[in-house]
Length: 503
Image (tube, helix red, strand yellow):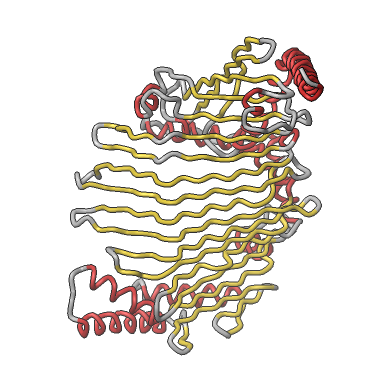
């Protein structure tokens, strides 16, 4: 054996010894690490389930520890309305084959030499509840993945949902292309990044009138970049992009399609206040192949007091949510609904939470709701600033005026946009005469404009039907005309009463 070979053998022996020693050490510490991870996962599940009619819990069922690898089993159980009507809820079992660090064999063979505490290979187990999924994937585990656990308690890996095709019931089938998501989680889940992609999902079923219904989703991309804020909740960005959503329905098998759908949301905190924004866009809305236009919607919220919100959510969880479930059960059984009861401490908690929430002067805004066609765009916006009134016990009218610090409403209806939509509808209904379609579209557009202007609730600006309302300091400005709140209410009632035929 030459000198170089001897050095190489020495290195291999040294690495093997270090790996074996590290693997033994990892094995002795593994159960504590897993139990801590399960506890942290349950905290996140509890937070994620707030406001939903259900609970979820993860449990380490068993751990068979070895020198170089171990096998763990977990139980994930969900109960409540969101998991179905069964009293026992939903129960999933997972098997986890864990390679001990610092150099798991599966990483060595893929030339990943950065030491890790462990590499986890998990998969869903076959049970009576999941056997249909296994049958649809030719007995392969429909959910599986790999997670690498670092010595700093960070984790990275992926979750994979296998392609499948199965019958949901006698009249419904589902076809799924599969989904793969990459995950990266910092120690104690302080930061989270996720990226996923699904090619297609198709559900075929039958409507109540026995006509076929086909729902298709194509090209779904998911991405999240989140970090825990000062109060333990995730802040950051969530993005969803969908290439196309299509529904085929009705006796004529009409097709409604939405293309280039995007949903983007962001949240942040400043001190004890939170702010957030969500934007939704649809690049193309079409009916039976006829393009209608594009749509946008944007929501925003500012100055949301986080401790007050959490306090109110706690009351919701302990009182309002159980009450809603009991009321729904009573209604289903044809029995009188129970009464909601809050003790003095809970009433005080709600009152204090509302006062603190309003003292922060929150703002809720529908920044934009719009629909655009080839020849015009209609849009609406609504911004409401709230503030703390002198007392929450004030009469309704006075409470409303003190509660709303500012309200701004803008509506713009485009006559050309209305005509475009009516023209497409006419074509879908079978009209082919271009002149007749144009006349019908323009007549409908002018009729809607005349009705709006006749009520004096709107004005005409060019080809747009416009209505504007601004309220602040107990004064209303409606379409340029200033008046008191009482005058505005009287004006509104008289106009709406006239429309309804009330003299």
